[in-house]
Length: 279
Image 1 (cartoon, rainbow, N blue to C red):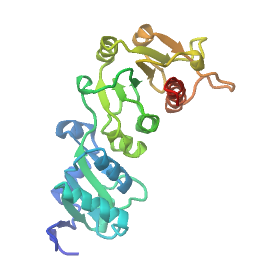
Image 2: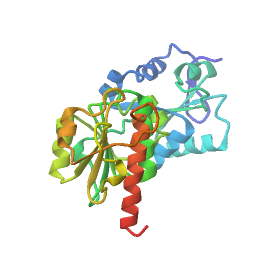
Image 3: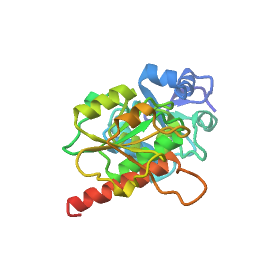
């Protein structure tokens, strides 16, 4: 394999894992680096395609010289090139070093992190918002973002998250929908103040209530809150709740996985709001 060089078409070819660009990519797996640079990693054709469709402009797209063979892959790289993204080609061993998913498809990109500030969220009248407090596992946060996209949730607020929205595994679990749903990160206190300032009712999931989730009104402006995998929402959020709801459990466990709980309640909200609109 030749040394790092330009290849026909003007793209840089990296053939050594010691290249500084490779080290920069590996550093983006750390939250501190993502916070400092405002960048994150997207590994996968589908995820990058969805991000671009949502209006995100990738900074750099790294492609494998041996995996980039499908028409879909070449199309998304062409779209990124049209947005003035730098295209860098990686030798097979180099791409294997920087890819973080099993069975990579030959495309890895750096792009701006999706999270924004609360005051930058643009909401419609009577919005439906999902609040995720203290979520630890990237897979759970990613799954909730995917649900939010599928259900048409107007915004997701990651409150005091243990994992950050820019975590590559959150992006992977969300299938890239983290870029399609308005997402903000904030403290619990700031989130509750923001909800109150917009007169949004707060429906909180907890096993410690007698009110079933189907017996609650989700029409109008409402936020649904779920809590950390181990402890649920904090007392501060419970105290602010307009409604406390539970999902009936018939087995030995007293609750569902947090991502499953969010999906169940969100879709009940969507059902009610769809009926209100005549859907």
